[in-house]
Length: 130
Image (cartoon, rainbow, N blue to C red):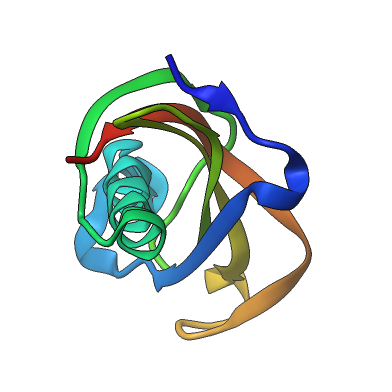
């Protein structure tokens, strides 16, 4: 079982990604929740490389929550924070936040940076490293 880390010992990586129209899957240009989960995997890989010198292997997600919609034209900021460490397992907290959003009501290519990011998806997960 991973032991919790003190906040000063936690490590966070941040990725940002523009969500292209090709990922819209539902009416209203909505993107499926698996898009953020894929980004969580990318962030977890970087986190494992930085902390363990290995890409690691994702074992499980816990407590995945879809809190707000993600749409084509959004810019997502994904964070992965190492919060507990075991001999081979690592516990990671994830968040996907919308930091910019397309504004088609203002024009075909209009967009804005949000004053307050919108938390779209949160999760915790476990990775294993050799």
